[in-house]
Image (cartoon, rainbow, N blue to C red; front, side):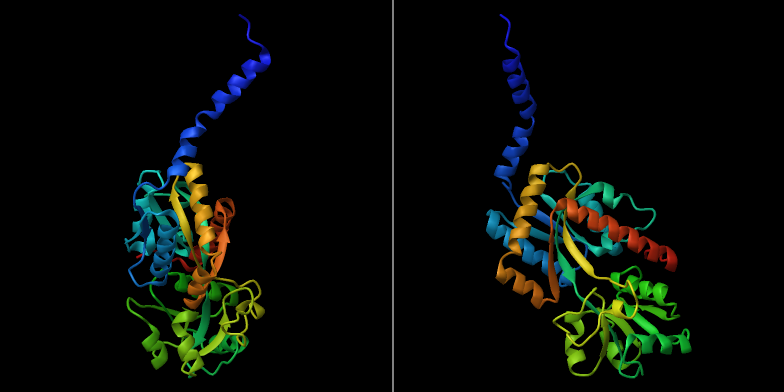
Length: 320
């Protein structure tokens, strides 16, 4: 018996759709067991706090535990490699941060190739501060002061290759100031308050108290526009055209994770921060929600990687 052509095409179309059905079923059932979120920084860090907020909200929304595991070290690369090597089944997630956009040689993975973006969560807001002993009250005054005293101004960061270190080197690259980086293993804020170091880029949440008390002077925020948290503090880009920097966070998964699971996670994560209470908790941590779907987040990561690669090359930064 000769089958009608239309019937044959109908069968062929149905057969072509069959391979997607298991993926759809996985997404509908997902998750069926606890999900692990790998954080490349110690417990108590801002990235850890945000990951726990996201994990708690996802646990409530999806009815399964989302468990945060801290795997710190090597600018978060230890935790990243754990996720790269994990099965691509949606049960091992990576808290992606701006540290992942910092390209270093001799890693056992390629972040952009090996991690699939799921959703951007938001960004940490930063401010450039100085000890009140520094005579400058504006960015132009600070640049003039630093250029008149080459090599005599120190700026602090949590370590070589940290986001705050790169912010300082980007400032150096764009302004030509000759200032000295002082990396710390513990908090640098006590030395900044005491004047042992003169300047730093810091999360606003970390220093807004000393700023308001007059113990530190805020020269500029590092976002493209002024912020409601510090309305009288200019954006650094108002004086240094094109300067913009922030620490951002999101979620990624191993490459080849089923697209249906990626889309499910993306939808649920973005829904978390549509909730006013969850959004308010983020803002209280000095964090600005910045939701993005997978494709947009992937482009954002690629652009950030290109940007910071230039700074790393300029400053000849080697990971410790």
